Length: 207
Image (tube, rainbow, N blue to C red; front, side):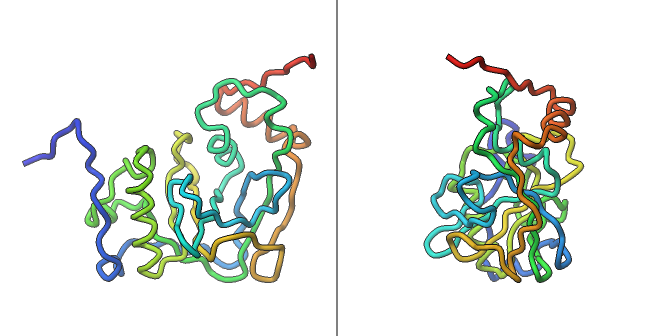
């Protein structure tokens, strides 16, 4: 018997001991990820405030990165079709990398269906449920999750939520910062963002 169509099919996560065989993806050491962030903070920050889809709690946190620059902008300004130019001020975009291999649970694999994963894990507003998935996968030993970003539609590149102890990390041998640019200086990226998505950056005249 098929499930009711007009209901949420994303189940509760299995206990960590039952997730050992969950599909994985390995990013080799040195893989470059992209992160957009406040210019007042470094790119490596692992949040645990519960505002993010895959936030961990307590002493653990989550850092959200992506395989592509446009994804980070779509997520940061999610849902905005017109972006005032002043809102991109104070935003930086960084290329970061880790010294070791990163083995993550791959939520984009169809093999996750056997564990109760559906596409709703990428866009449901039930963050307590997706955070329970993050907690179980973290407890099962995964260093993060690979997923489709909510506001990105083409699915050519993924987003990644990396797990670690909560708080900031400075540029170091383990948590590298390859480059950081003010978003306002990345005219190439701003043009690409608008061209590929139809988002408009509105020039707001000063008062």
